[in-house]
Image (cartoon, rainbow, N blue to C red; front, side, top):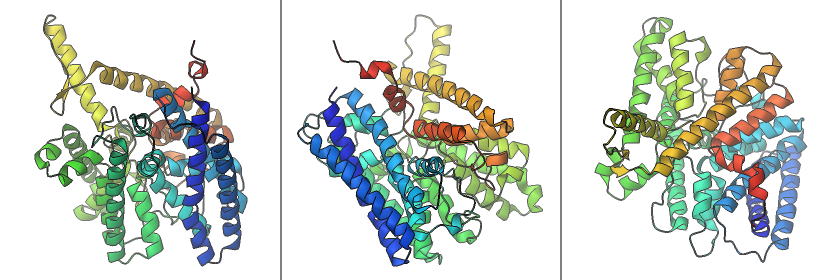
Length: 484
C-alpha cells in the first residue's frame, strides 16, 4: 500500500477545504460577524497548515493507486473533512460541544440534514452558509470535484476514486477519460443548481436564502435556514423545490444522454421508470389518505404530499408540514421511501432504485431457473446482461446494510427512547434523509440523543453516503496488512 500517496491526497483535500471555507468567511466579514469570521479563519489556518505539511512530506509520491487505496482515500478523506469541517462551529461557540458540531457537519457533507440545532435562525450568516454549503459539496462528492480539477496521472487509476465515492450498484464512465466524466458531472450539477437559484429568485426569495436553499436542494440535503424549514415560504417557492428535488434524484447519466441527443435511451431507462412511478404513485396515495385533514381540499393536500414525497424519496429532508401527524398509511409509505431512496448516480441516498430493479430481475431469473433447471437465464437491465459480480455486490450490500441497521438500532436503544424514534433515526441517517418520526420528526431534532448515539448516527451517515464498503474496508484489519 502506498501510504505516502494517501497522505498526499489527504493533504490536497485539506487544502481544498481551506478554499471551500473562503466564501463563508467573506459572508461573515460582509455581515460584520467577528466571532464567526475568527473561527472560520482559524479553521482555514489549521486546514492549510495541516494539509500543506502532509502534502510537503509526501510530495514525491506519484498519484497512482488501485482499488484498496481508492477506498481508503475516500473513507479517510470524508472522515478528515468532517473532523476539520466541524471546527468553525466549535471554535465560534455556536455549537459549543464538539460531538454536536461533528454530527452537524457530517450531516451536512453526507447530505443527510439531521440537525442538533434547536434555533437555526440564531446562527450567524457565515456559519449558516457553511452549513448549507457542505450539502452542495457533499452532494456530487468532494473526491469527484478533486478528479475534475486535479490531474491524477496516466493509467486510469482515478476510476477507483470515482467508483468508491459515487453512489449506486455500478459506476461507469460517461466518456473514456475519468477526469472528463467528473467534469461533465459537475457541469450538470452546477447548471441545475444555478437554474434552481434563478427560479427561487424569480419567486421573490432573497439571494442568501436562494443560495442556501439551492445548496440543500441540489445536494438533496435539507438543511433549512428557518426554524420551520420551508413552511414559511410561498407555495410557488415550495413547488420549485418539489420539482428540483425530484430532478436531483435522477441519475445524472440520464441528463448526459439527453444533452447528447440520445432521448430514446434516456427516456427508456428502467431505473428512471421505476423512480417516477414510485414518486407519482406515492404522491397520489398520500394525497387521498390525508385529504380528510385538509377538509377535502385536493390542491393543498396534493401540494404538501408532493413536496413531502419528493423530499423523502430523494432523501432531501425539507419539510412544509409535520408529516408525523399524518395517518399511519402515509407515515408508513414515507418510511418505505426512506429505504428505497432515489436513483443511482444522483445526489440522493437510500438503497437506490437501480438495486430494486436488479433484485426484481434476479428474483425472476431464479424462479425461471427453478422451473427449468437446464435453462440459461441471464439477468438483463437497461438492455445489457448484468454481470454476476454486480449482482453479488447488490446482495452483499443489502446484507451489510441490514446488519448495520440492526446494530445501530440496538446502540440507540440504550437511550431508552421509543422504538419508532430509534428505528426511524437509524433509517433517516443511514439513508441520508434527516427527519424521522416521533422524537426525531420534522418538528424536532437530534439534540436529545446521547454522545454515543450521535457518534453511531454520524458513522451511519458516512456509511450511507459512501455506500458502506469504503468505511468497512477502512476498519478491516486485512486492509492494513502488508502484502506477502
